[in-house]
Image 1: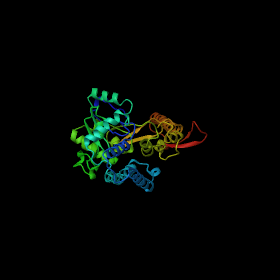
Image 2: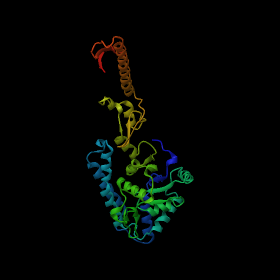
Image 3: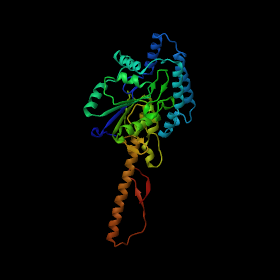
Length: 357
């Protein structure tokens, strides 16, 4: 769906994977470990055990969730699945706090660490981001960041060289506990941003707080945690190829074959299969960005072309027959046979078909 630049009033960007080339949570963990060693503090829980516990929870949830991924073919089903990660993410946040890996660090520490991580190349921004921000400044677009990262101060340090109007993300208190952003209420463990729904709530709160026109906002995201924001406004997907989790999810839940347009699905066409496999373009699909926004894209596969061609020829034939009948009726003063059924020889087959009009 084309975007009119003249109507844009704000850009909202995800951080990890959208602005940066990689996820930065591991960078944050490394920063915390270095800080504790420098101050001769020991963590209560080894970092590897925190990572392993999250991995087990993730695997248990994804492997036992019903319906399974292959059976989740609608956006609503997928959103229910993604929102269910809230408990898993919250538990992981709690384990991070309990480990005390960030205990004693303040906002200035995280901001400085973010700035240094960008400077020494530990964190890398996507190619063209600086030019993009320069263009945004010339257009006088307001720039916001919404992220489920653990530290908004760290993000602020990474992006300290750019004019960001507001960063909405979690924060790490000096006791090492991760809390949510103030835009959703008093910062607490209950208000953390952890899922796609949390980010959508944050976007809604941002729109209200900044008095933005939601129809003229563009959101940039790269992961499944961005889905609800991407469909709430004008969305741009950041992806290096067809194998990203977000692209695969959208292919599975948003696209359907247009063969069903004739009343029943006759087959899964070759081009649709190639598209779903990531090796073709969505030429034979119906793209459903949202329940209220449908876009029929050009169809070019052989079966769809044949079906549309057959329907067109049938309609043209019926229109021609009706015109001939009307002429005969007019010529005979209305004295014409009352029969409304005709035997019509098919131009593409030796069989005859009954066609009614």
